[in-house]
Each structure stands twice: as C-alpha cells, then as structure tokens.
Image (cartoon, rainbow, N blue to C red; front, side):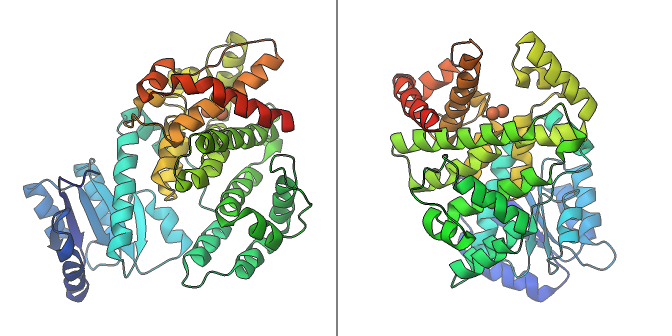
Length: 405
Ligand SMILES: [Fe+2]
Ligand SMILES: [Fe+2]
C-alpha cells in the first residue's frame, strides 16, 4: 500500500455510535484514508454504484441485510474490493465461514492501528492473488486448513499486556503429541543445542518466543495431515526439507545482516514455504499424484507442471492461506514467489531472496546426492537484486549447516 494515494474505505454499521467512534478515530488518518460511512447494506450498495472504493469494512449483525449478505453482493458486483467483516463474535465458526465472503475478520471494537496493519497486508496479498487462476483454484478448495487454535492462543498471550512464558508453556503442554514432536525437533541436530531440552518452558526460554511460535504452527499443521491416505507422498521428507530451508534462510539472512524481524520470520517462512503442496495433495489427490509422478519422471520443475495442471502452483496457494491467517507480509511474499522471485514487486535483498536461494540449495543438496549438479536459481533475479557475487558464500554457509546435520 503506498502511503501517498489515500485508500477509499467504506464503513457499514447500523449503530450510529460505532460509526461516530470510527469517524473520530480515523480523522487523524485523513492523508492515508478517504472514509465514507453507511448505516445499512442498501445504502452501502448505493454508494458503491456511484463511486469506486478500495475497501469495505462491514458490521456482521445488521437488520434486513447482514454483513455476510452484503459482502457476498459486493464480491459479485465489485470483485476488486478488499472485504473485511467486523464482528463482536470471536467464535471460530464465524471466522471460518467468513473466509467465503470476507478477506479478513476483525473483532469489535477495532483499533485503528490494527485496521491499518490488516489493510497493508491485504493489499499485499491482493497483488499476489491478482491472477485469476489462483482465485479459481482456491475457490474449488473445500478443506482449507483453519488456523490451529493453540497458535491463536499463543499469539493472544504474546500480545497481552504482560505476556508470561509460564502461561505460553502451559498452553503448549496441553497438547501432548505436539509437545513431544516439538521437543524432538528442538533436540535434533538442527538446532545444535548444547544440552537436552525436556520441557516446553525450557524450549521457550532457550529458543525464544518467535521460534516457538513458528514451530507450534508448522508442527501442528504437519501433524494434522494424515499420512496414511497418501502412501505415495512422504510428509516426513517434506518436513525435513522445510526445516533445512529454514536453517538455510536464517543463515543467509544472518550473513547479510538483515533486520532482526526478518531473522525471526526466517524459520516460519522456511517451515511453511511448501505448505501449498499439502493443500493440493489433500484437495486434488488424483491429479496431484499425476503431477508429482510426471515431474519426477520427466525431471521438469514441479511448479511448472503445477501451473500446467492447475494454472497456479503450491507457492501461491500456500501464500494465500498465510494471508488468510494474517501472517506477516514478508513471509507471505517469500512463500508466494519462492520459485519465481522475479514476479514479486521487490527488487531488494530480503526474506524472499533468502528463501529462494535456501530452497534451491537444499534441493541441490538432494540432487547432488543423486549425481546431479547445478543450483536451480533465477540468475537474472539475483542480478537485479545485486547479490550474484554473494551466492558462493551463501552456498558455503549452508553446506556447513548441512554437514552438521
Ligand atoms: Fe516449493
Ligand atoms: Fe521447497
């Protein structure tokens, strides 16, 4: 979202007090946001017929036409608009159903800063999803995994006024099988810790909250995938690959001394960069099995085969889900473009560059074990970003990690 062009936002709420409150809070942001207010769905649709808007933020419960009906109509008539639902209801059910008609579900009362951040992320996501075929395939997906409740609980605790490590550890400990898997991962050579960790609390203290957050999310998602239905796809291999990509990404980000935020995002981006594969597998098992087999037998890039079969790839699909889950924009961008980085809008070295190269290095490691050589990277993109001469050092740093593992 550019700060110079104000975004036009339409707010819809049947309670005059809520609209007045929003008007007051948003007055300070006139330079960024052009706001219009409507008291009901009918009025909102009339406004939209007369003037183009970028975003609609609607109350859920309204007489005559509720937020869901209104946003469904807006989706049909003005598909380019970003749609946000404001509800007093935090129930999971509402959030899940709202995925159909809203891009985001926010809880009342909504803080102006949270709204601003949400909008920035949604605009970034909209760029990713500008392509019609991504929208088409996503609309056919029946079982889009929901954000694990344990992850939401951790985030909530982290964002509370006085976050407590004890409480976060207690949240994790409640899920025994996940705790066991997390301890197995943190005690693996991957983390290279000097001593054995035996409790979530120790893990949180030693590795930090950002790391634990990323581990909880990815371990939970991977564990919910039922391996027994797909004997021809090895989910453990994918998890191990994702761990290696995380480590490579982190090492590259560290070598380049990028901001601490990006270092924190490295683990999450690496662990979830191929999540779209699990979504394709679960929702389109037969055609996806065919795609995987053809790619393996022909030696062609998997993502090129996916584009041929589905019009999009696991990269965009994974990024779409991350967007719905409100993950940070650099993570969404890195996942969306990890195979085709030149399609992104950023021309600077960032998380995307690190994931793109970190992924290629791990694939190359697997390939050299099979006798292949050569890194599958976008050389032109690396040149544009100005990091071609950094490649050999990155390969060295990453191969040291691989040796350790
Ligand atoms: Fe990938
Ligand atoms: Fe990958």
